[in-house]
Length: 447
Image (cartoon, rainbow, N blue to C red; front, side):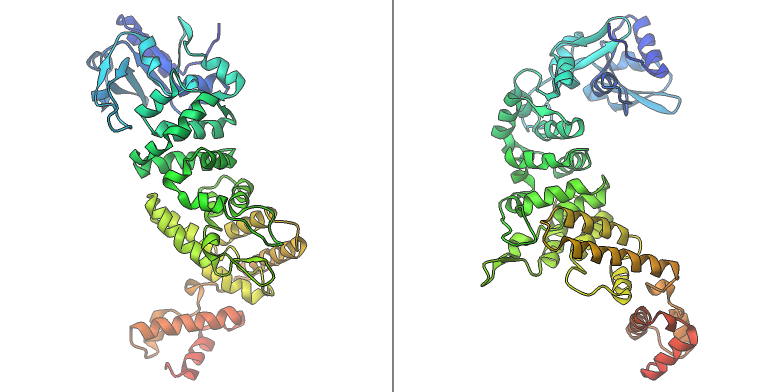
């Protein structure tokens, strides 16, 4: 019999419930992860006890979702969700059941769950309860719905995205019947809030297999909430620098960057502006002039639509805007200092990671020259840091108070003067000295 090592707190909760005459099992993802040899993020417990009965058994509980049968039991400053066996009523909105009915049967509770790998239960006395072949699907690497796939997705359309997300996190295939239901019911994703879509989408994007984005496109899922990605997948790049469509190139870049939230998003959106900027020259070669600026603007619109936070939007848009910078110019220390100012010292290393991934997903055309450019972009960045060069207003040898003390009035002109001094210092780092900078202001007529 399969033996799962339960945490002591979980054992205690299940023992207390059992001693009161009720059933209690660990259920769902914690059972799945335990079978896979992974550390579960949390432990969920299902029970035949009603919520008020659970509350009576423990000293401290929280009514986190009592209407749907969930009580959180607090032990040692950790919360454990304990949910009464239930079956769901109708899903009129394609997302939430109109009602739930508490039942006494574990089997009925497991039957309402989304995928077989999430519909297993365990306790030490009965062992593994696997009514729908979840363990077999884990062994075969399959994501498959419990029962009729269309019924599961019509109940909750978010499960369509969860299927791809689980397959990406685990490296599994999706069962053909489940895939067919996903494709036919993809439009139901319109019923799901963008916040929930974004959450599932990011779990996929940060998974070990972000290339499953292509499956989302093939199944018609991205068309429902990120149609711009579909346009990229269908945009050719007749250009010696490229060997893939814009979309396939994008997926390869996403694969090539680490699983960092900002980097994966920047990789996803870095060429989003190319379809809008594409034009064929007299040489019959596609050109994409201005795509970085257009892409940055589009990225902001898309990320706001998808309910991302402002700081993430700012960083991603910045990387998209500058991802192509330096590809067609001579790389000098001065150029790099200005680029550091524009991108930000903290974000600059991520820009370099993105640029490396971008080149790795292109053709071999001029690849060595591109890599040499990147080497210089890194070298001069490191030199600027080592030498303590001024890169932003914070590092300038004079501040606004110094200019006021020297006779300038507060206002826009003072800010303009500081920005002009910064430009000069970026070109001539040795000028970053108070006397020299005040002399420049006198020379320019500010003082």
